[in-house]
Amino acid sequence: MSNPQSLNQVRAVALEVAARLVVRELDHAVVESLRAPALRDALSAYDSDCAAYLDALDAGGADALEQAATEFCSLFVLGKNTSPHASAWLGSDPAETGAAITRSVAGWMDQLGVEVAPGDWGNIPRDHLAVLCGLVAIALHAPHPAGERLARTIAVEALGWVPAFAEAVEHATTNPLYRAAARLAEHALADLDAA
Image 1 (cartoon, one colour):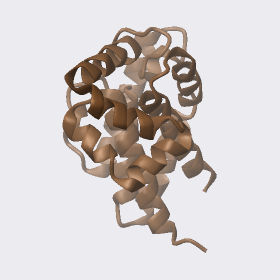
Image 2 (spheres, one colour):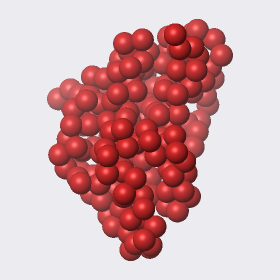
Image 3 (cartoon, helix red, strand yellow):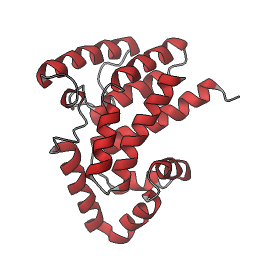
Image 4 (tube, helix red, strand yellow):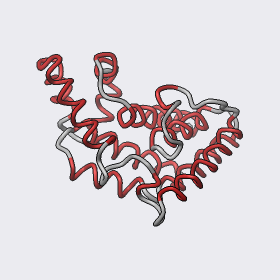
């Protein structure tokens, strides 16, 4: 039987990777980090073309990264059908939904003792998938059972829209990293909910 704490650490890392891929364009440092065997294998489990794509990014140099940046913007910045914001998927009034989620996120941040959203997502709306995944990861890293309970609460909230988001990304792009990131987030959240 697996150690629940080590499973939570694996879930946390998976969510951190997914968050990073939907919040900011690829750069050389991220591509290099994704080459780590564990991350490469995790992403390849959700899209078998990830390893070849990472190799192609190296071979293509700056042009390949520019193409990936264009795809990122098309999907996650301009994409109405692939928005990584909960407010785009829930409720009939995105502003009202976004405000409600922002209040929930503020409460979760208070519970975790997080004053400012860490990492790359400090200035993005609080209903962004990266913020939700990041908060779940922080909660899973917490050394007490309350962290896991809070992580499950956030996961359940996110599962109200992340499966539809992942499906939309799957159909909107051929970029295997972005497809894998969306599925990885969905599955890590669902796995936590089922645990």
